[in-house]
Image (cartoon, rainbow, N blue to C red; front, side):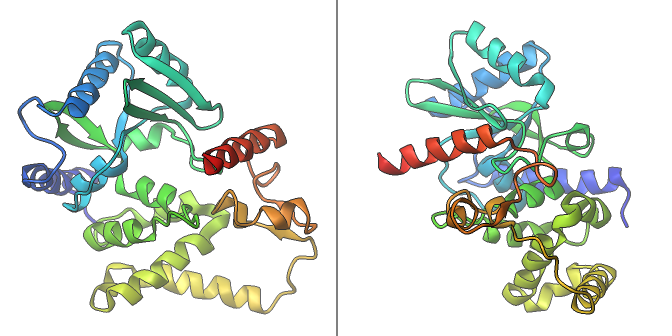
Length: 291
């Protein structure tokens, strides 16, 4: 396996290629686009406040893969302990701030321009920690030196997005295609932990989408998944009625946990969300659907 430094050097070259693309969301010169100017200003505010952040979302995806697409906002990932400090710094600079979900997400805005400040995930699993920053990839966005979310953590967080109106599986496949040979697979497997079936499902799809590239997934990992499946086949299924679908979609499995007698995997001890947090999340998303 390549060393961390060699791996980062390789990915930095990919970032340079992506930001040089005519449609890429980054350049060495300051932006002219009003939204991009806003993004740059907020990042400068955070840099001046010495509040560390990582660029994620569509902009990081374009830098990692060279695939750019229209995006309505900028995603900045921060440590949970820095969340309030980041929002306070933006408020002091004159921007509107909102804590949209206390367990996951805040927003910074000016007019109709928005930046998401993220420190975890909607299902409460993918919390930002120091390893995100340790393995971050250096790049340049709107003329500013920044760091991008590592591909392993992007795969981890995107793998659980399986809503009816949004499925990030294609993003996972593209990240695997570009970085499969240099991924820290052991760290990625550790990230999924007991939810390894979610990673396994995406690897199966990757082999389906790109049959000629399936060797980018190490044999030892697929053999390990096969071993785990065989172990499950030779043991009795758990007696408790548990639904883990709520880790993949906030809405599509609500009937199971609200009326079907299934336990919600988002609750402790399996998950990290309180009943109050889940109720607030469901209420907000239902309100958005009605608009």
